[in-house]
Length: 475
Image (tube, rainbow, N blue to C red; front, side, top):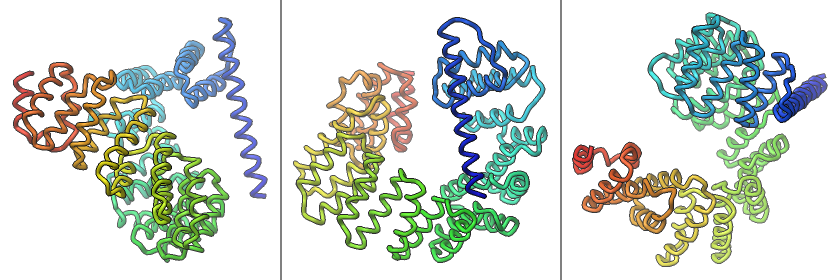
């Protein structure tokens, strides 16, 4: 019976998707022909949401404006316009649009949800996120999105008991919403707030013992506390409520892994992979188990499978390097790394971790430049890349290398306006104030606005008196 229900739901979703595509094609034909076609409001919503989904901004704009012309009395299409501005990072236009909607239409929950989202994105202190969500709540106390966002915002503020009030209301309306509880787990983990996490999930499981998200959250919390036996018990309870739960199987595998029960970990990881055949993290976890079981051929196979899905997956790359290094295949390691950097952009952490394995200084420097140039070929926005690179070099005492790379690429048009700032930051962090002053002065002459980015490149920059003096003098 359950299988049939899932099957029906999948067919309905597929039918809705096909209908959205059909409507979008009709709309595109209308635009091309210049003729006007009528779509009802539900159809226009499907069209707009489809263009949002595929991020076709030009067609999205036309669909929204056409919908507004057809249904000027429906605020939903004006709200879509505000959402389009947010998508384009035009926050002032989005705020103005939403203020105008509030002034000319009766209030409705989605407007205040979107206002709260905008405040969250911009860090604006003009209004409080919770205050806006409470406005939405007063308009519709059974709106599950509002209840979820209120719960999440109160969790962020460590108002756990208040958050639980909204969670209980939410689950009484729609128990399936518990699948969104992953968001709470991510926040608790980032904040390392394990005490609140334990109270939060334990309270949920006491009140709603048949909610898988509660047991999963409790399992995750126990795993954070390195109580892996308890974690496994709670993951098993979550799986007993839904055996097709990849996250529970994966994390139970992780707990078995930490307990060094690699065969049992493999069972859980393979179940996860059966449920999600493209999960490269699971492939890497399988490879790690095989490596620790000294089954190196199998480990290599799954590391390579992970890279087929995600070519810049650090753990898989380092796993392959470890096996090749263990087998004394130094030449193959270099060939593999060069191929990996040619195939996809890799990050600096991987680059420097690998270089640490090379003892010859000359070889290390040559390879460093080779791999950096390979990565640079993949980058479209080179200025953002060099900004991140400069920060990384400042923070990780890679100043000499950073300076040589900036100078080597200083003629790149993409970084022309910021190159002096990057060099100034690197020289200052190495206490070479004379050259730091020279490049900072040049940078301010070429691009004064860039000073705000310069000051964020390293924490030490705001503490150097020379910098303040130069800024005050030139400004």
